[in-house]
Image 1 (cartoon, rainbow, N blue to C red):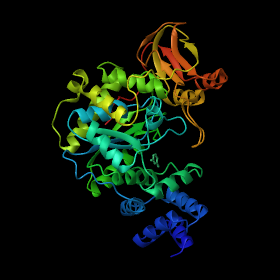
Image 2 (cartoon, helix red, strand yellow):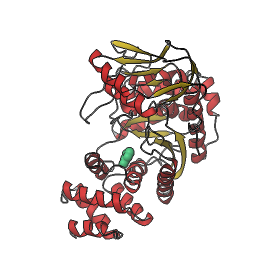
Image 3 (cartoon, rainbow, N blue to C red):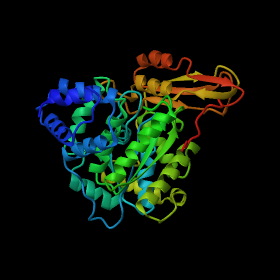
Image 4 (cartoon, protein in one colour):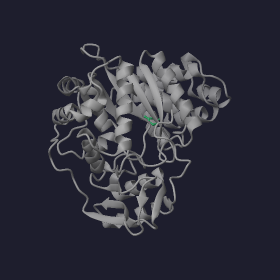
Length: 421
Ligand code: URA
C-alpha cells in the first residue's frame, strides 16, 4: 500500500477502501506515513467528504490504534455526555456527579480548552490538589467510590486521533464533519461507555455555526455510536450566547457548585437536568429524578467524593484573579444580544484559555455576566466583570467585546431556544 495512492483516491473524489483506511491510519500512527501526507489526505477528506461506510471504517481504525476500556465488571450501567464545546459550558461538572447520584456510573474522559472554548480539565484543575491524570485502576477506584470520574485520556486511547487532531489543528482541517465525528466518537467508543448523550452546540460560540450543519454532525455521530453498540442520542443546544453567568476556569467551578447546592443560573440548571434525564434514559436507569438529587444534597455528596478521590479539596477556596474591570451597560433597556464567541475570546485573552497546547491557563481569569439576553439593564450599571491576573490583558479583552452586546426593547427574536432539538 502507498500513501500517495490513498491521497489520490480521495483527491479524485472516490471512496477509500477498507484496506486503504486500515493501512493509512495504522501506518500514520506508527510514523510510517508522514505528517505532510496525512495533512494532504485530511484536506482531501475535508473537500471531498466521506460516505457513511468510510466514516465507520475510519472510526474503527482510530479505535483499533489503541486500547478500548471495559467497564463490564461494574454492577450498574455506564453513561456519559460529550459536548462539542462552547463558552461557559461547565455542564459536565454538575452533571457527572448528578447522574451518579441518580444510579448510573459516569466514566468521563475529558479534554482541555483550545482557543475560545474552555476545557473541563482546565476548570477542575483550579480546585487545589485535583489531579486530571489517572491510571485505569485509579479511574475504576474513583468510579466505585463516587459513581463518577472525570479525567484525561491516557496515551493508549485512540492514539491515531491524538496525532491527527494536532495535525488538523495546524492545517485548517478541523471543520470537516467526517473528521470531527470520527475523532469524537473514536474516543467515546474506546472509553467503553454503554450509553452516550451528545450535546451538539450551535451558534457563534460553537464549532457549528448553523443548525443544518450541527444536525448533520449529530446524525453522523449518533449513527457511529449506534453501529458500535453504544446507545447514543444527541441534542442540539444554543451557543449563540454564553451558558450561565460565569466564563473562566475557577469562575465556572464556583457556578457549578451553586447548581449542585440547588441554585445557579436557570439555563445551566435546565440543561444539566435535561441532559441527566437523557443520560439515565439512554442507560436504561430509572432511579432518583435529577431535580430531586440537586435539591436533597445527594448530587453534592457525589461531587465532594469525586473531587476528594482525585486528590482535590472540595472545601478549599478557589483561586481569584488579582485584578478586575467592569464593563457598564451603554443604555437602559433590555439586553437584546450578548455574543458567545466575543465573550469566549475575551475570556481567552484574559488568560482563561491557551494559545498553544503547552501554555498554562490562569485559574482565576474570565468574565462574569451581570445580565443575559432578555434581562433588564440600567445605563452605567455593570454588565460584565472582567477578571485577570495581569492588567495588561484588559485592553485586548475589551477590544474583543466591541459590538458584542446591544441594549434595546426586547431580546433578539432570532436567539436560539436553549434546547433546539
Ligand atoms: N473535538 C474533538 O475531539 N475532535 C474534533 O475533531 C473536534 C472537536
